Image (tube, rainbow over all chains, first blue to last red; front, side):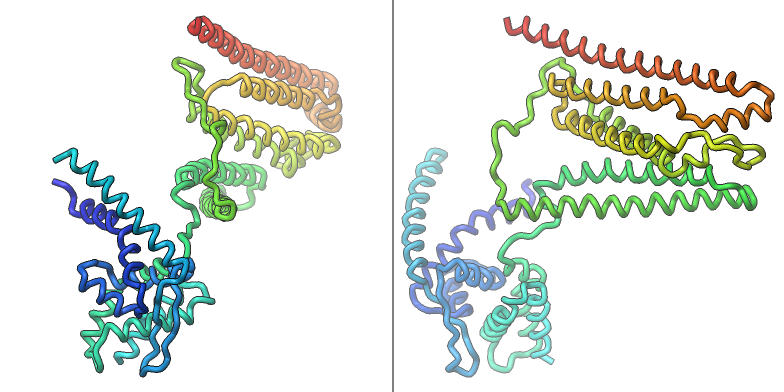
Length: 112
Length: 337
């Protein structure tokens, strides 16, 4: 019997890289943190709030996102959107993803 | 009450972060948390939202730009290893120096009281020196960590790889070298301490009173320096042995040079003509009736025997090392053919 923790860790590892791609994909239009979380959830992309918010900050500091505080409403909100660099990177990652999909299909197909 | 909970959570996260980013992250978090809640949320809803974000400590770690370590996993093994050796050396030195001090302080009070005092002070010393060694080793590794962080050191060269221990070779036993380091250091330090600080307490005593000291203090400072250098070199050679793990020609040469120099040092120390003060012999002669020059020549003979003994022991040690080396080299050469 495999340890439940081991399985959980492996699943988290497997998902980690794809999460960034999912986040980038939803930021072609402006979103604030919570709306992004909900959008992702509605598309069955599981990401924890405690992971998403720091991730947004990191992507912004890497220059992939640009952000703006909207102070018009009752409460200020920070809106994020892909920067030019972010758009470029997103396209590259998408291509890479397709490549990985094909490679994995080929590899996993052998075992069926 | 409810606002209080949220602000306390935010504070718990932000206080662990660099100051320049605190304000911004505070605002982000506050905005995100309120977004997760409806208008006028109940305490339970707030609690649920905060629990969903996870422990403030973990969240703060995710907000940290880089992973930070005092000693990273990459160095942890080396760290533990160094810590053990250094701690043992420090503890032994502190125990030994406690004993020396005890031997050289005159017994004033009750003997039992004194013994208890000595044991207590040795334990206190050992304890303190363990903490000191821990602090020192940790500091050194922390500095290594910081330096490597700046360099971004994933670089390594093939030349850095350790050589494979050849089959049935002259493997150097790690335990042996570590024992050598520990005892060598402890004895050297005791010896250096005696020569530098306690030499005035070695001498001819009558009923607990010092009549004449033994060593001529003129030569001692020079030899203290030389013995310290010798200790340094021996530690260096031992470190080489630990790193290489087997007798290579380089190590054999370093070891030979050290052994010869050390023997020369000890012999030259023992053969200083007026190492021992003449007054020392006179004092004994006055009390015992034996002529001073007879005593002097007796001590001289003792030193000569010691000198010869050291010379022979060193030579035997060196020859056996080299013979093993050469025999082994021959065997590997013939195996290659």
